[in-house]
Amino acid sequence: MNTADVITLVKKQPIGFGCGLLCIIIAVILYLRSDKISESQTEYEAKSAERSQVLANVRNSEHLKDQLAELQKLSKEMESRLIRAGQLAINLQYFYKLEAENEVKLMDPRQGALSRGNKGPYMGIPYSVTVQGSYKHVLSFLQRLESGAHFCRFNSVTFAKVVGSNDSPGDAGASANMNLALNIELLGTQ
Image (cartoon, rainbow, N blue to C red):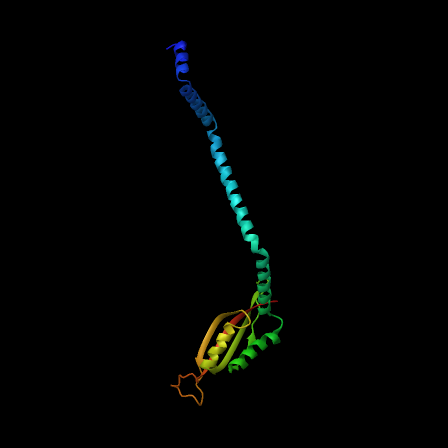
């Protein structure tokens, strides 16, 4: 096949040869730019992730003022539930109030030593409390302490039955006197 034959063939099939030549040119360009494809794909994924993040931020910011107001309200409520370590008399009044509400006898409420290792704004203020009363009243005291005005963590709880002169050893009813010894921590600040 010589040049004249090729030219004649091209004149007979111009669209086919044009498409073939275009495919060859595109294949060469694609081969030369194949390293750019992975870079472009990585850039596209990064921009797509950034776009998703921006859209999520816009969607989440719709109720930002309401959420801020709710957080401020909850923060004030939490601050009101904290005790102050230096206000011993006020802190003990909490236990005396629970004593009066639950008809138990508060034997020995005592604030423990504060740990100095705490670096945060909040700390657990230890208390050792002993109460005496009927099983029903002691349990009510324990429940009120658990769901009371201050945040409370129980470190140890010990129930013991008090055998007195008017109790028989076999009496296990709700009127039997019980001792409740507690080691607790109330959440507070300095």
